[in-house]
Image (cartoon, rainbow, N blue to C red):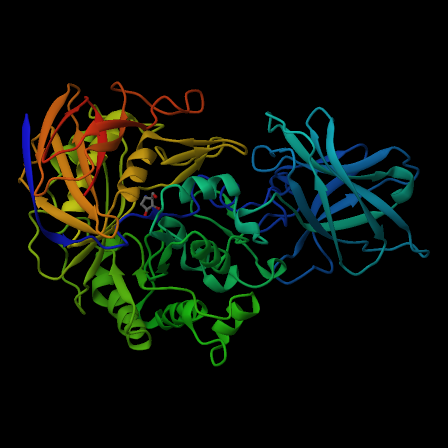
Length: 621
Ligand SMILES: [NH3+][C@H]1C[C@H](O)[C@@H](O)[C@@H]1CO
């Protein structure tokens, strides 16, 4: 039995304590949160004439399709186009299809919004008018919904738009978007297409917005912050490939896209504005990274070359918080629909610069910090060259540090007091990435498992307890598409029409929902204990959140002695527990889900915590 008495002494819990780390990894942006359903919609960064250039596209009927460098591109950002050639004398239906990001969801009641640019490089002497049919169909050819899209041949680019509404819900995502036309209408013609787009309804109805079910899944965690755009995906293989904010704003037709750092093309349709608008809609605040001159090929920008990136970072921040009436970058933000500045308090300078500590310490940190702090003294700047609380020497001395740790359950159980032992010297820590990535045996994990998730919960009791120096923490990576994954495990696994909440998702959710605003000191404990606890309070609600983590496989009893006698003698608790090895997977998505229970609340509360469990007992004064 563990006897826990707690006092009314303690410290505030920062409102930023639990949030989300994001980068476009595992198709978590394109094909995930970003709601665009068409993969390879604008043939960005592909090599014309190659089969890879046609990824996700296929011809319908006898038409010939290929990706060409248009002789008159729709924009300088999008030089490529789909060339659709119909032989003379064709009479049968012709067209082309797109298979989406490994499938396309068909959901009853959804009105889909589509558009495409098209032109006829060599229009016939007499204009030809006709109409395309845009539809959603099964790979077997069953059409679920369609729209007629009139067109007239023209050598200049036109943009067509359409909508259609699905009347059925298909459990299979083996569906295609198709554009087709009667062969006789277009026989002998070659028509170019690009930026062929299809959106489902989006979160908060935002144009060019985010996928609803994934947004709702994240909203259910009430996350306080969103770290973006990376992570490795900020850095580029080279400086030229980095995530550069300016290429991600403005009209979609002006966004070139880039080769992301996880093996697939980033359309950058999910760009800086879309991130910020969604973060605001979700009630979060950004922790925004700026490129700091180090890329994944191991090269650092020379000191003499830093000004370009300093200017870029200043402009990136001005896009977010500048005055639209006086600043050019802020004026772009206003023109996109957000005249007022977005909320911004934290800037991360680089990512994992412990891989390039010398250049970071010699000049990259100072160059960026000094310039940004001078321009925006109100912002907090986070350094990234530490992996633990024993931080390296940097000048100027950083206050904020982003720490990353990926390990096994034993690390998180034995490390539960890693922050207790740090001196309070003014440093503030962001545990920006952490996860149990292997079993204690070293075996890799494809999905989180209950043993690792409860170990993470033990470590997180340390975040609550030390939230006087831990201001933010986020599990990583956040999301993975079942059909395109480069890193496991991940917090949330998704397909085009399903979302699986892992056991670690529920741990993150419970800590975030029951964060409270004040931590109450209690009986000290040790890392070797199988039971960890944390007591926080929601002061305005007069509620106390007694978290109990039992990392043993057998039950353990905790007896709490409160510093008061609650007037409400019945309390409600929530528990996540499961047999060792349990995982939520696509075949067993709900193997372990939280459940609620009632308990008797008094000056003392005896709680029998099952093996491998995280429980939150809510006591009302
Ligand atoms: N390598 C990990 C650390 C880096 O910051 C992330 O991009 C990766 C997982 O999210």
